[in-house]
Image (cartoon, rainbow, N blue to C red; front, side, top):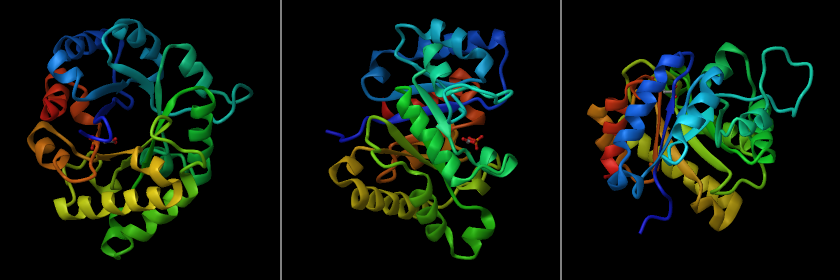
Length: 251
Ligand code: PGA
């Protein structure tokens, strides 16, 4: 038996309108018992669709979440939403520290950590993203970068039920490029070892997803790597057929 239930999370980024509920509907339809018992699926649409999607997904066991949150409960943060607001809409998870937030909005490890803590405060699971840039990998610094991101952004008290990690090499996101299986295996094993060193047996329960250009054509290879407990999927999560094909690797 697996220690960790596999999880496949769709990150829709800034894509989707009300009409996209039809795509979610096709995902719900395709998420039958043969999949449900084997893999947990989640969709993180833009904030404007969270409530609609939560209502549509009621009873389907597809988990709905957000792509970011502010670390505070409420206040003067024009444009932001809090973890409590996501929970209030019925959301169950939130992506924090995504590399697009880190690079385009200069978010730090400390902010990612504060957001993960906010998620826990609101009863949400956070999907905390880490990963090296291409320059860092070429310089042989990937593991060192991951170590410092783990130390800086994983909150104390992380457990298998309040935190999911996502290893997303920045250069693999949206590019069609993926690391070799050996590189993915090395990083995931390293993250696992660090989690166990810090959290003991609880570190065994924290899921580690791989993200970056996961698609139906490479899913079975990537998801078959040791210590890869699922995927964080961007582009290929926008179409039900592709997203279901990825999750179906576990069927
Ligand atoms: P991608 O995005 O699957 O389109 O590469 C992954 C992500 O940004 O989480």
